Length: 116
Image (cartoon, rainbow, N blue to C red; front, side, top):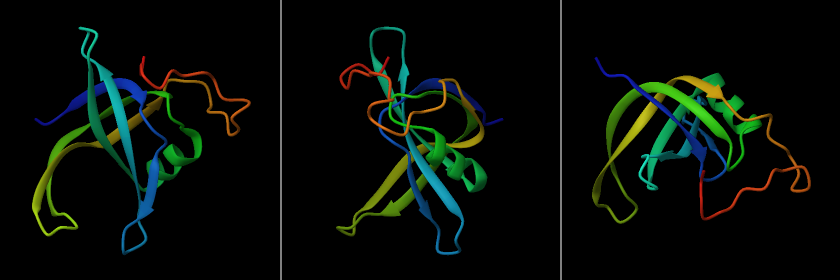
């Protein structure tokens, strides 16, 4: 069984794009504490309705919970080199922070150096 659960903070604002068929896909950079004053960065991918909701309501620094499947993806970069990426494909996305502020004046303070 391939299942993973993570809780952490977003390291940057969600990045939303559409596939060639028009399906929304959103990429999240999740900072997860290892419990040893270290941070592990995990790539998280949301699809369809979850992707649009993530883009609409989440900002850098937001705390989220993710349940999904770990997957490896191979691709060719702009230089033509074969690369691989490990990411979590989201099944359940939980918003654990209050609704994100849309203006800088309303946004809570988050230190850029410490994601927790």
